[in-house]
Length: 142
View 1 (cartoon, one colour):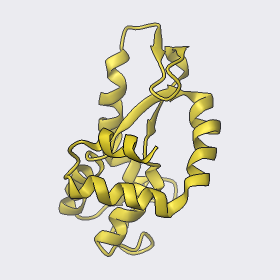
View 2 (cartoon, one colour):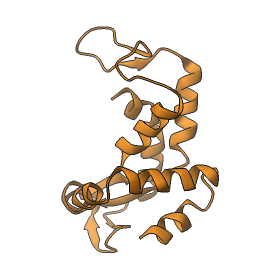
View 3 (cartoon, rainbow, N blue to C red):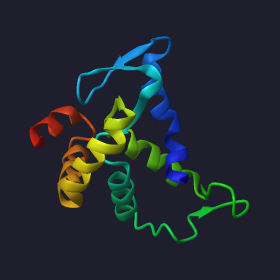
């Protein structure tokens, strides 16, 4: 939750391209949907991006890198430098707008089928290119 909260502005900025419109075209299926049905999806599933970041930085999610004010609040990173690294890391990976059904059904099934090894290879390729040409790397793998 803390990792999602920190990058929410990146997701919102991506979705804001559709402000004022009534419909959008899914970047997955190329079909037309009402804008209220829009989800912003990580092309590489968020969980794999987050897990790889933690591995690279030797972070144990259960450790003391995050704290919360009480048991009901969303934990936050305790180190600003780590938050900045996470923002920069996340920004290297492409987002797309899709319908809610595509995001929660079709794409979830696809992601589960592909699995960790597939996505880690994509992550490493994108990191080697420092986030440049990320779409080209993804198309090569699809």
